[in-house]
Amino acid sequence: MLNGKQYANMIISAANNLINNKELLNEMNVFPVPDGDTGKNMSMSISGAKEAAEKCLEAGCDINIVADRAAMATLRGARGNSGVILSQLLRGIAKNMKNKKSINAATFAKCFSSASATAYSAVMKPTEGTILTVARETAEAVEKFENKSDIKEILKEAVRAANVSLDHTPDLLPKLKQAGVVDAGGKGWTLVLEGMLYYIENGKTVELTESDKVADTKKLAEASDEEITFTYCTEFLIDKKNAEVNVDRFKSTISKIGDCMVVIEDFDIVKVHIHTDNPGIVIQNALKIGSLNDIKIDNMRYQHNEKIIKNAEEISKKSKKAKKAEPKKAEPKKPYAVVAVSAGEGYSEIMKELGVSEIIEGGQTMNPSAGDILEAVDRANAETVYILPNNKNIIMAAETARDMAKCKVSVINTTSVPQGISAMLVFSADSDDKTNSETMLAAANSVSTGSITYAVRDSENNGIKIKKGDIIGLTDKGIVANGSDINEIAASVCKKLVDENSGLITIYYGDEVSEETAEKLEEILSEKFDELDVSVQYGGQPIYYYNIAVEE
Image 1 (cartoon, rainbow, N blue to C red):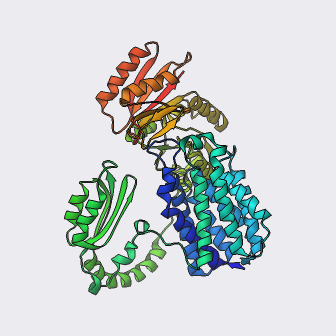
Image 2: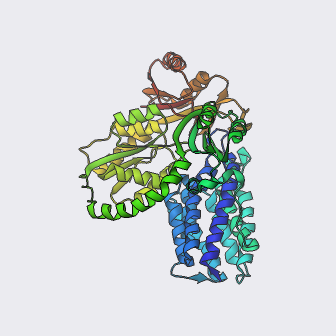
Image 3: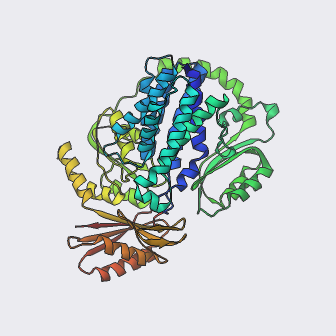
């Protein structure tokens, strides 16, 4: 029999295995662009399940409670399509454990089919050669497996089948074969199953690698005075100047002036925690890496001396506050509001000027979770809320938030911020929800978009041989141009996007492009496409030098 304690440990082990391998998944990118985020999305999505499982372990929950809470936590934290599908796989397993304190091996075997069916039903147009295929073929193999009386043997068969299916994903998706990779989402599901099997075989969970361990700073701050060697608990985030900065040198420098040090590097962010007598020196060295956010410096000796007094005061204050506290008067709901995802200061300002109520910071490499979107919907405080995901990898998370929302929500399937801007230009406060949704989607779909970035590895795409460091231009057809000059590549992309119906080209330049360079591109395009209107605006987006929008 499989009980709640065992399943909770299986979830924790699966999460750790996935988190440990997130960079491997990030590198499995079809295009050689610097925005691989499947590993980040899946690991952040399953982190909620891990936390829920840990709480269930403490409470001694039955298996149905563990499964339900882990699935719901993954759903709320789901980021990107892969994260949403992962949440549905865990939801399918939870369905098969409903009302059960523990389950036998035969019931466990049925969980795989339930997981696959639930995930497929959540996707409007399932694509084979993805995590869905791996989950389905794994379920089919387990269903045919003869030994359904041993949970360990079932999991071993599931892992075997998942890896076989994963190896075949390039045969189903030509773009995977062209890029020389297997499906990253499918690999993520395989890692989940391998993590579960590890616990069943070894009686212990997969350990997090050192780089993924996060200090429990709350407990560190509560150390007794006798244990305090350094006075100041110093914490902050660093937004890295660029990907080349040497974080290891920074770690080596500050390790000499403190203890309890944790420095975690994640893409363009570095999380720093250290106990030191010289927070100023730590901050000075951090500024060499990038700009600082969320700076927090606490005097732990002072905290300790005040703690006993505060604890006593808190007891009396809570009872007084409970008597005096009055519920805050609710603000009346607005008839409508718009929530949009945006990456870039310029983009966000444009969206606000067009009437967007809530901006969610996000986009490529930083997909917001369903929970993040739901919170923005709640903050919007409206009878009807329109969501502009502005990225194809955020649409499923937006739809998940819609299904959890308490108000009426319409998701407009915009796949880029320029599409979102066009949608906002036709939004009308006087129109009903159906009319607005249809009009906004039509406006978004009338925009053809392209982007300019750089290659992070050698590859071949659409017959184009690409070298690491090349400037590359992309449309919805993939990579269409490469070279060494961003304006030259941008002009090539525009040529691919413009047709006889085109009337306007809008260029949004990113945070690494100067206004002067962008204005030179405007001159080039105005001369090259003299029959069209050309506009250049500051988007401030990371990673992409330019985003291009061509409209009728």
